[in-house]
Amino acid sequence: MTLTLVRSAERHHWWNEWLDSKQSFPATGNYDLAANAHGLLMVHNEDTVFPGEGFDSHHHQNMEILTWVLEGTLEHTDSQGNTGQIRPGTIQRMSAGTGIRHTERNASSRSSREKLRVVQMWIPPDADGRVPSYEELDVRGELASGELVCVASGMPDVSGVRIGNRFVALHVARLQPGQSIVVPEAPFGHVFVADGSAVFEDIGDVVQGDAVRLTGTGGQRVTASTASEIMIWEMHAEFA
Image 1 (cartoon, rainbow, N blue to C red):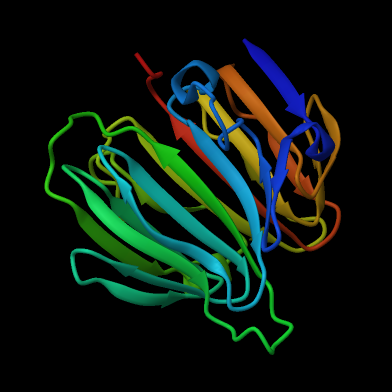
Image 2 (tube, rainbow, N blue to C red):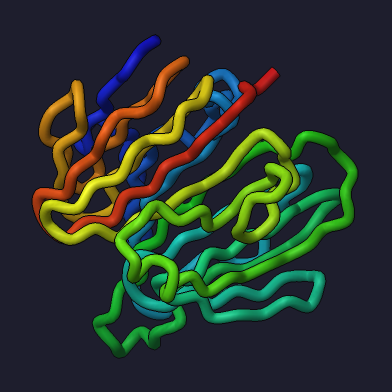
């Protein structure tokens, strides 16, 4: 049973003239995503995209891609005809399957000052060759409870958008100071402080951008020190 704290400043940092990408697992460049994965989590990027900028059309295959907006508005289009504008409180899932092309951009104009800040996460499917698909779900009402909300899952009888991997679930909580949640027990876990600060049982203080990787454990209490947003991956398998 292990708990590994990864501070925000320890993340891989990549940027260009319009993108600032802080990566919990190195993703930009010639990296082996599978070798660097924790459990099934291969990519976990906190990306800040400048106004009017974004990723032009590009291809993905056999990957479950989850996007969670922290600030601003994300504009999505893809080769399956799906379009959408994703704002904080809405989870987006794109299953690349046999192949899909998409664009992701900051929906605000270049003349505005509204940045886009998102967390993008990649999980492999539990079977290749599925038909590509897309789903969004607004969970703002559920998050207002201050409880840990399952926003995406491939597990049977679990809420959220459906991921094409039956061994994973993504949870989010929005906490006020003093509120707490308990980390689900699982063979692999990943807890990310998306905003704010908290006290993580057996670790201590954690702040925005920090992550805790768990192996063979769970049940720790996370208590908000300030208004906070906490994201937790629960994983019952690892990349093979």
